[in-house]
Length: 193
Picture 1 (tube, rainbow, N blue to C red):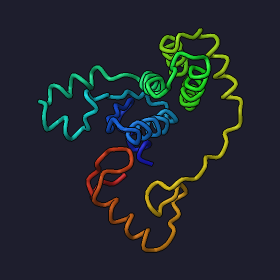
Picture 2 (picture 1 turned 90 degrees about the vertical axis):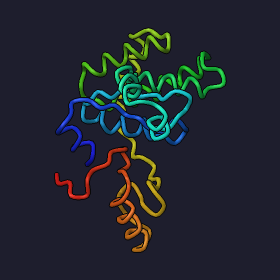
Picture 3 (picture 1 turned 180 degrees about the vertical axis):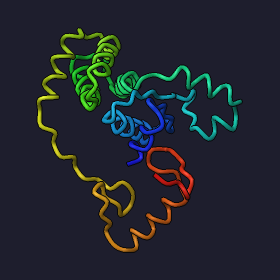
Picture 4 (picture 1 turned 90 degrees about the horizontal axis):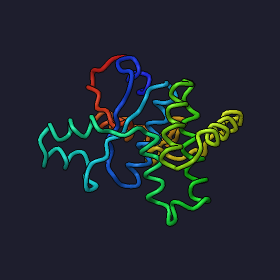
């Protein structure tokens, strides 16, 4: 829903979340939604693990602007993040796991141009032949998409929009009217699609 609204007014996106495990997971999940709409996605990594609020309160706007201009692609972000979380990032097993996750992200785009650029970038970062990643990508694209495991988006809220009870639904509606949406974008309360 929000991704489609963004697509109407922009042809690419730059994401900036907290540099913790939840923030990195949210970055990839949001990027995947945008890639399904064939939007190129870049990611700003804040120095020293700062969150966006603290970075802006301690740095001038020009510093943020410079980081935005030097943002890395979602593929570079996902490769480097996954490699940093692996105990032996250059092992065959680690590279296999990382490339599989990155290829799943790449496969979400229907744009052959985006997919080719992303495969080339991933091949360079992971030190793999482009042909090998392209072959693996074709296997992923041929696999039927498995239904996701339903996990709560927030306490009492599920991916399919169902609520555990009426109180959860009211609480969620109130919080949604006051806080940024799950994609990190603050829309005015009177925003209309």
